[in-house]
Image (cartoon, rainbow, N blue to C red; front, side, top):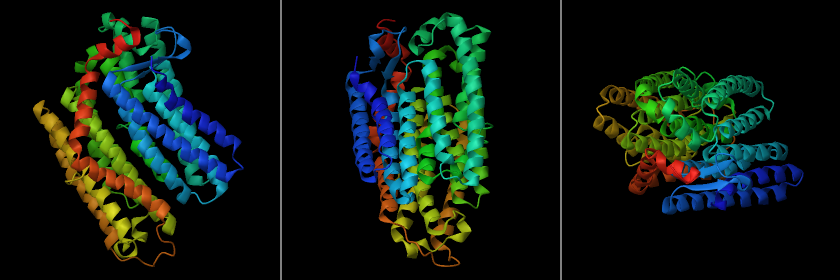
Length: 492
C-alpha cells in the first residue's frame, strides 16, 4: 500500500479549505497557492515515477481491504492524466494572477480552483465506481461556481446549461450504478471486473454499458451530446477554459477507457462500431462548427469537440497501438489547447472581446504573442516538428495497421478543415490590420504560461519517443486488466 496516492487528493483539498480561511490575506494566499501548486506537481511526478518503476499502486482508506473499503488505485493511465492535469493547472494558476485583477475575485477563484483540482485527481485515482460519481459531482459544482463567480449574464446562462447537463448525467449515472450493483452486489471496479464476467451476455450488462457510455460521452462532449460545451468554454474565465479543454473534458474519455478496459472487456467488440461511428461524427461536426465561428474562444471550443473525436477514434480501435496513440493525443492536445485558450484570454484582456474581427496586427503589437500563438496553431494543425504532428501520425498509423480505413479517411479530411480554420484565425489575429490600436499590451504574467505550454508542445515533438514509450506501456497495462485486479484484490 502506497501512502503517496492519498496526497494528490489531500493537498488540493486542504489548500482549498486553507484559502477560504485566508481569504482576507492576499499575501498569505499567494504563498499557500505557490507552495501547494509546486507540491502537487512534485507529488504527481513521484506517483507517476513510482508506478512506472514498481507497477500499479493502491491505497486502502482506513486500512479496510477491497472490496469492503474505499481504495485508491494508481496505474500508468492515472499517473499520466494527473501529470497532465498538474502541468495545465500550475500554468492556469499563474495565469489567473494576471487575468483576475481584483483581489476579491482571486479570493473566490483560487479555493474553487483547488476544489476542482481535488475532484480531478480523485477521479483519476478512485477504484470505486460510486466514488467516481462523487468526484464528478465535486468537479461539476466547482466549475459551476467558477462560471458564476463574476456575475456576468452570459456566464450565468452557460452555468445553468452546465448544471442541467450535470443533473441529467448524474441521474443516468446513478441509474447505471444501481443496475450494476443489483447484478453484482459490488461497486469496487476490480471486484466488478471479476464478478461481471460470467454475466457478459446478460442484457442488463449491455444496457448498463450503454448508459455509462452515454454519461461519459456527455461529459466528454461527444456528438450529439456536445451542446453544452461551446457556450461553457467560450464564456468561462480563461484559466477555467484552459482547464476545461486541456484536461476536464478528457475526464469523460478517461472514464470510457477505464470501464471498457476493465469492467466491460468482453463488450469491446460489440461497442467498437458504435464508438468509431460516434468518433467520426464528432470529428467532422466539431470541425464544421469551428469553421463557422468568428469568435476565437468559440472556435477553439468547437475544435475541442472535433479533437475529442480523434481521441475516441484511438480508443475505439481497442488495440495497444490505438490506445497508446489516444493517450499521446490527450497529452499533446491538452497542452496545445490550454496554450491557445490562454492566448485567446490575452486578446480578451486587451480589447474586452475575442471576436477576431476586432483584433489584428499582433505581429507588430506583440511578436512574442504571435510566435506562441503560431506554435499552438501549428501544433493543433499537426505540422512538424510540433507534438501535434506525432499525435496525428501515431493515430493514423494505428488505424491503418488495424485496417480501420474509413475512420482514418475521415480523420485526414477533418485535418484539412482543422488547418484551414486555424490558419485563418492566425491570419485574422496576427496579420490583418485592426480598426484601432489596443491601449493594453500583453503582460508578462499572461504571456509566460502561454509560452511555457507552447515550448512544451515543441519539446514533446522533438522528444516524442520517451512519451510514446510511456503511453504504449500504459496501453499495454490497460489491455492486461488482470494486473489491476491483482493489485487491488490481491488475487485473480
